[in-house]
Image (cartoon, rainbow, N blue to C red; front, side, top):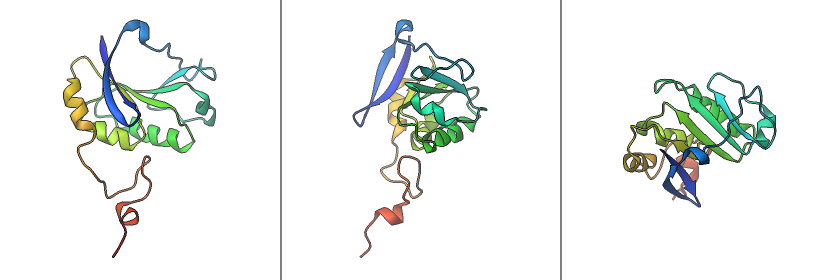
Length: 144
């Protein structure tokens, strides 16, 4: 059984995901509107994906950052639903994934959910803008 970390009303929670709860993923070649879509990191996002019930990005390796860029592009085309990281993800980069627009993570079997939860929000503020907070810190803070 794998662990799913997801954001529920602003709070990150861990839940065990059984095989029966696993979405019936469709690939970008077979996908139809309203169904869960699972894509690889090398696809180009399509505006029609906005109608997906869930989008999963499958990371082939921990060192492959293309999924982060793809997540940002998917958010920029207007997708507002659950964006899930799948595959070879690691606790160390979860906070980057959140800033790129991910809202859930299917942890590999060897990941400790408690460690992963602690890694999601290691900082209270960021200087740079992101998908979830476009304005940089200097624009968010009042001067004076």
